Image (cartoon, rainbow, N blue to C red; front, side, top):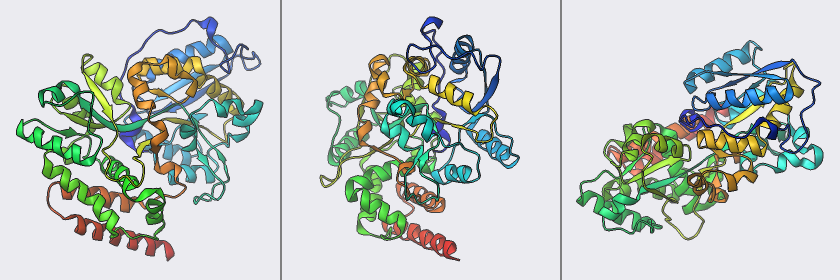
Length: 441
């Protein structure tokens, strides 16, 4: 995933659990002392996690005698460039993450930079593998017959998960004469609220739609609901054109949303940080954002009274889907001299006690499914709909980046009334055909 969805923005350090409760695998056994005195390095981009990571590193060194150096490189674009440069120079750290599409992940694996963790995940009755939410593990797995040419296996360890949904301000709902416990469920109900927002001269939905990927996220939600997963994937394979009536319907929804008054002014040029500030300060009725926002809103406005809702249902033919499952993940450098130590540490890091601490410290959803009863309630609201989630990194096939960019920019142009849905569908399809032709050369 790109930039913002991988940043999981915020900082809230807490003290949690004594050293006596720490263990290597999340059970009662203590870490082996065989590796005492060794050290290895982890690169990451998560500015909100550095304090928590350093605390966990201290605990691990005290328990296992192994020093873990967490090195932060931000912003995310700078981090990505550093990882790519290090890969070219065969100078990657022992543990690192990749910010990018599934195709980028696959290219690192095929170049020999990432260790296959399947055997470690499946050791001891697959206890490590079973500790994760299946959706969290799926984004790090390449199944048999995948379209990337990667040998089947699990190649990364999920640290957390995320879901992206719609939030609404309950206090502003009351001002609009709406029931704060009954958010809209259908697209028609959603549009009707837009009329009330416009009449009250309020700001409607805010989001980081200045970035095309976040616009595409909601577009895919609508597409899955209107035409179903199979037809969406058939489009990516090239079997269905973007000029199909179902895709035109998807693009048309954004025109209807804009015309209704649901969208805030300037949403197509808005970065997510500004959108978060507007919603946190009760200056917008809705926000389309990811679960990382829990920590952001808590820091900006601890008293913010908000609820969570699924994207409004357009069709009853297929279920509503949300983007989710993918979060932050760590890979082990296949050429590292400390591979075994790195694997042991990642197993410890993703055990229940450490996951609960990390979730409390950074308000992130843990990847370990055994933690839900012990994490903040505002986070569990995002986790409850995880089974409805989907993500491009689990589809086994990827759309051309040029196509997704054209779609996002096209939807932006619909919102500002520069182009019609039909024009956008035609332009996206032309980009698709050009990229397909290039691949065949």
